[in-house]
Amino acid sequence: MTSSASGPPSGRPSPPLMPTPNIPQKSPIVKEMAPGTYWWCTCGHSKGQPFCDGSHKGTGFAPRKAEITETKTVAWCACKHTKNGAFCDGSHKSC
Image (cartoon, rainbow, N blue to C red; front, side, top):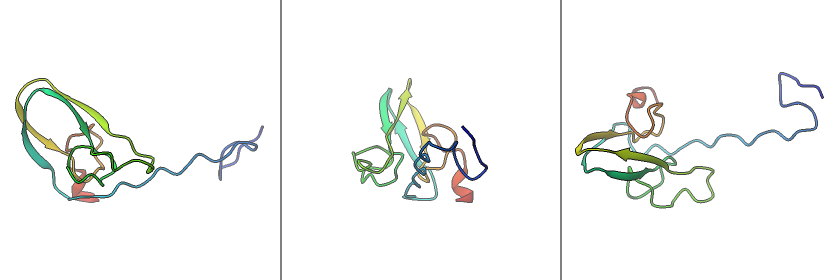
């Protein structure tokens, strides 16, 4: 099997392109959160941002599980480009 710089080894299908998330807002969603398990929206289409409402179905996205262990203020990512799980890392400043 050979490979080229332009694609996967011959005989294999190209992997699907990673979908681009919708950006609901370019600032974090800051909320006081109780301990629990939350499902963060990764597609950006949920009407209940920052949490998943199932709007991702058929998009190639899936919600991301976030565990909160104590009551605290959380800055949830709303630009969907964070490298910090479900939490804001400042990526909204460049997207």
